Length: 290
Image 1: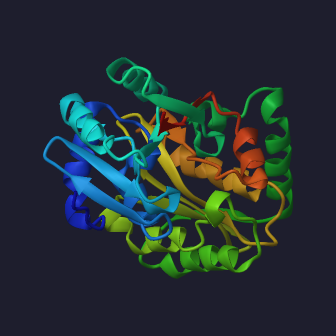
Image 2: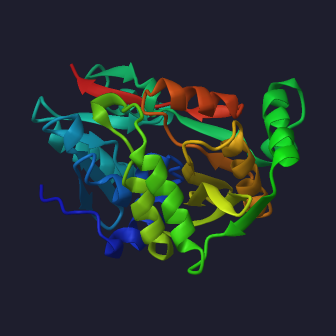
């Protein structure tokens, strides 16, 4: 089964297949596959009505659960099962149910919490009402009282400011996730490929100095994927929450929800994403042949 690198020419077909099949995971979006292909050793098997992605970082014969036609997915999985090393990652709960029905007693399933995707209600986060958001409100008020705060959409004119924030973040020491995954160069590549990936975003300034960048892309008709959320090392406490609120405010008329992606099993990232008070998670599983 011949696979290929994820290229920009594959974007429209991958996104059409995702839309038709109603697949909502960030893991399977073209932008995610394109940006993470080197770090996760991804390669693409693309047909007219479905696609599957091989993830070398997970093992010799491990694939993302296929996306697209049920018949094509069934045939793909059945053929791959002849090799007992074949396994699958990034399964939704509905994929687990389907696999149990179509291949009964052939698979073992394991929860992969570090791959769960955090889903927040945009209007709720912008409003910041209630006790669960009290700490975020306090931090935002304090920043307002101490600094001249401004925001700009990322454009050609201020693009270097956005890159400076991302590069400063990447240059600081931070923890890595399972399999040593980090997004050090992912954010920079996403900014460099903004037009290709349909990425848009904002820069937050304190006293005219760029301190935070948030950016993302349309994931589904009602959900925005928050791909980038970075701030410089010495930014005041709460800067990331303030910048996120402004970014979501710019997108509130187009989207209802935002997907904050997975936490890679990194405790600090997990704490931040839980502090955003997600209304649910996209629960992720992996499947191993018995």
